[in-house]
Image 1 (cartoon, helix red, strand yellow):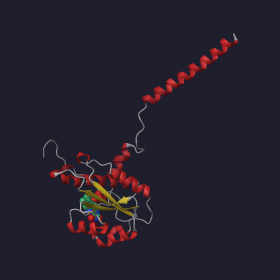
Image 2 (image 1 turned 90 degrees about the vertical axis):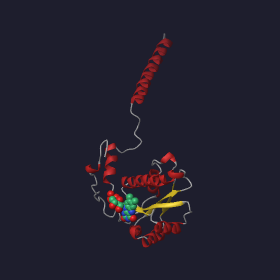
Image 3 (image 1 turned 180 degrees about the vertical axis):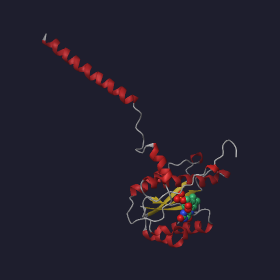
Image 4 (image 1 turned 120 degrees about the vertical axis):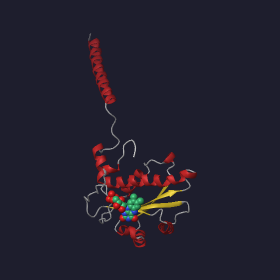
Length: 214
Ligand SMILES: Cc1cc2nc3c(=O)[nH]c(=O)nc-3n(C[C@H](O)[C@H](O)[C@H](O)COP(=O)(O)O)c2cc1C
């Protein structure tokens, strides 16, 4: 009598535990998988709309972790036939940043930047023939990803054009010891904005949109 009572109690406990497990399992199965990022879609769109070129920076240091995030964002970009024909040169050395500022009239802001990333095309990794020039679009997509990521992290950055201006390409190649097959597309100085909250330009123009035919 005592044994069967005990067995009944144990059976009841086992049933309760089983029901709890079933309910929990079903719930976790029907829930939407966790979003990979914490930003809501509205915040992501807002990040695109509020990005603007930032050309003056404060003295606040940026971390290696932030630079790593920017490079990961760059390399998440789409590329033709997934060739990923790029290389990135990260510059943190003050003397090199100052040299860039002094050698390029279009990159004077490098003197204030905490770092710069040089986005380069790698001609050894491109498509052959006519498709080779896709490296420019591939590296441009990477650049925009990097700029948006920088803005999302509260940093300021600006795309400073190098390729296709021959003299600029030559100067960067010499300065950074780039092999012949590595072509610098741009230099992106990065730092915390000196004047946070800089307003983006409103470039939307409905007249540039054509439906079905031009
Ligand atoms: C291909 C390219 C080259 C650029 N070169 C430079 C540059 O050399 N120096 C600079 O200060 N900004 C440069 N910019 C940034 C543009 O001036 C800037 O994107 C444009 O004025 C629009 O402003 P926004 O970025 O704030 O929307 C360049 C942008 C692109 C896409």
